[in-house]
Length: 378
Image (cartoon, helix red, strand yellow):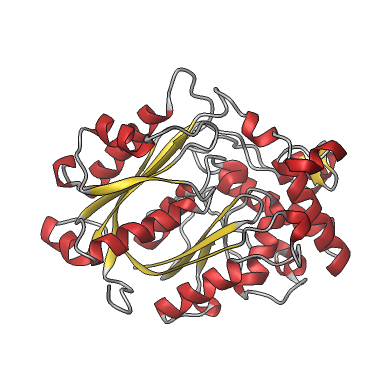
């Protein structure tokens, strides 16, 4: 692979299913629908697909899942399979696809993800957390509550900062016909929402959603040959991860977003100041604040002030999650953020940022265990 593939590969098509409660739908059928829509968006036939990269369903891991999806699609890929890195897996799989294309292992790749915890089994989100379960540590929310409380203690982060993230996502989602939750939020309603695990309120938490999403990845050259109408260049990507369980970490207020973003920005030859719009993983509101800090948009401990006064809303200095994010569009995590980034770079987003030329997308998995960063251009 060349030392710099920035701009040499594109997202050629995007597609998704409905989001929300979809009873009777299994994850394979949701993946197939999303892939069909992505191929139609790219204007190509499935016979050209020679790679299928799939994120395993969070709520129900399955053996040989990637092959099940490929078989249901009716394609025989040269390379592919399933990958689990939590919510960070989607950008990771996109980068795997690009590296496989660069290595001559495939030419046209599908990257897809689907899950159905809302109508199926959501027990994975409430499972006990190791030995500490005897002290009451259950659920995904409990780990994020520890992180949020530590951020508040170390930096004096006020509740209004977390509220601003939720309010912005809900404001944007209210204008998205495809969003699962289209009810605007204000500070009073946020403060009235019930506790999940103190200091996390219900409106700090991502939705639980059924749905599927997919993208088509290929080289820019192949996109020209196939006459793809609206390819979006991939300018950079990067990754970071830690294996430490939360109580063992040296710090709770930093993430591997810093490492992932540094790699992506260097690959793209860009910097945070160049970003026009961002789609930031918002499984919990604290995730957004810490990602903004670790990406370098503001100094550590200043994100609460950075997001104040509508700064991250459409029309603000750094609009984020313009289709509603995990807090409003769908909790089916990660790939929908890439799709919204593509639409922003195409100039076709419902809440389009005028003149946007660089979009940053973040994915994050586990309890801030894994992180991946993507930069898209036009």
